[in-house]
Image 1: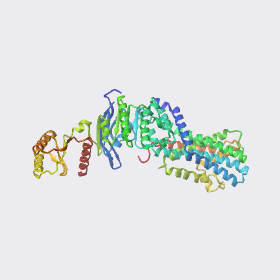
Image 2 (image 1 turned 120 degrees about the horizontal axis):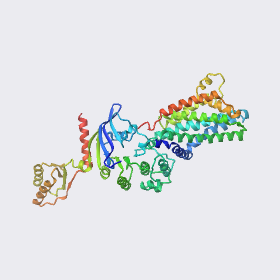
Image 3 (image 1 turned 45 degrees about the horizontal axis):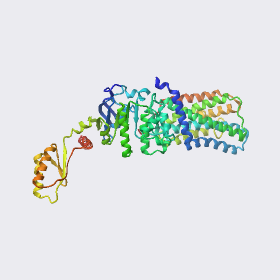
Image 4 (image 1 turned 30 degrees about the vertical axis):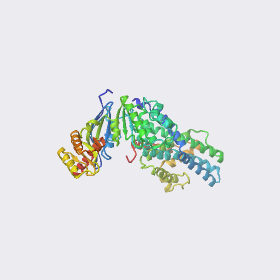
Length: 315
Length: 248
C-alpha cells in the first residue's frame, strides 16, 4: 500500500438495532500509516462502527472500504492483512501461550516469528504457561500478540490497555509506536484520553451516532481558546481588595471561578495575568500558587460530550 | 484462492490443537469414556455376563460410545467455543469455517475410535464377545454413524443458546431417543415406541452395528436412513453456523 493512500473510508454509515439507531451518520477516513483514535462515550456507536469496519457486522446504509474492500464481502485474503484486538474474547484455555500463538501463526500466509511476538508483548516468561493460568493483564497481552502474529498492515485495537498497570501501558505504547515506525496503520478505540494523545495522529470523536469532531490533538485542543488563571487569595484579604478583584474580572470580561476559589476563566490569559499581577503588586500581596492552565484534552472532550448530551435532551 | 487453498494443513493443526485440549481437559474426557464404560459393565452384571446378550449389547454400547463422543462432545465444545468468543477471535483470522470445524470433527472422531477400541477390548476380555473377522461392514456402519452424529452435533450446537444449556440440550436430545431406540432396553416389536424410534437415526445405527459386529452383515436399509440424516444435518449445520456469541 502506498503512503498517503486511504486504508479506511467510511461515508454516511448507519446501523439500527430494532428501533435503536446506534449509528446515524458516520464518515471519516484513515490514511495508510496513520494512527487514528476513535473516542466516544459508551453507547455512542463507537463499537458498532468499528465492528462494521472489521467485518463483524452488517450495515444498513453507507459506504465502507477497508484496504480497498467492502468488509461485508471480505474473504480470508483480506482478513490476513488485518490484526484485531477485540474486547473480551475467549481463549483455548487448555493450550499453552506458545501453542496458541503457533496455531494462529498457521492461519496466515506470512506470519511473524512466535518468539519475536512473545518478546514484543512481554510474554516470553509465560510462553509455556497454560492460557487459563494467565492474569487479566497477561491475557490482554496475548490478545495483542494474537493480533500481531499475522504481521498485519492494518491493526484495530479495541480498548487495548484496559487492565494494564501503568508500566505495562507505557510498554504497550512503545509497541504501538514501533508498529507505526514500520508503517502500519492503527485504529484505536479507548477511554483513556492520555492514550489517544500519546499514540494518535488524529482523533475521531463519535457522539450519539455521529462524528462530533475530527482532527489532530492539536486542532481539537485549539478549538478552545480559553485558559484558567488560578492562585490563592492571601490571608486576611480586605473586602476592598476583593472588590477590586471582582471589578478587574468584569473589566477583563473574564468569568470568576466559584467564590471559594481564587481565579478566573479568560480567552486572553496574558492580559489577565498582567492586570492581576499589577493589582497584587499595588496591594503588595504575594499570590501564591499562581498558574495558568490550558484545558486538557479531557476537559475539551468532557465539555463536548456534555454539550451534545444536553442538546440531545432538549430534542 | 491461495488462502483457502491451504485448508488441509491448517485443518491438521487445528486437529492437533483440539486433541491437546481434549485430553488436557479432564471432565470432558472422563465423561465421554465414563458413560459407555459404566453402562457396559453395569448391564453385563445385570445380564449375569450372558455371552449371547453381551454379543449384542457390546456393539450397542460401541454405537452409543460413538454417539456420545461425536454428538455430545460437538454440541458442548462448539457451544462453549462460540459463546466464550473463541470463534469470534478465529473470525478475525483467515481461518475458514471448514478448517475450524474439520479439525474439531476429526478430533472427536479420533476420540470415538479410541473409545470403540476400549469397549471392544473390554467386551472381548471380560465377556468373551467375539467381533467379526470381516470388518468391512463394521467399518462402514461405524463410519456412517460417526458422520451422521457429527453432522447432527454441529447442527444442534448451532441452535444451542448458551454454555449452561449445552450439556442439558445434548443429553436431553440424546437420552430419550436412545431409550426408545434399544440402546439400553429392547422395546417390544411392533410397538408404537419402535415405530417412533425408527424415524430417528439411533436405532438404525444400533442395528447396523449389531449386524456388522457379529456377522459382518451389511445393513443397507439402515445405512440409507443414516445417510439421509447426515445429508440433512450437514446442510443445516453449514447454513446455520455462527461465529458470534449470542449476546454480541
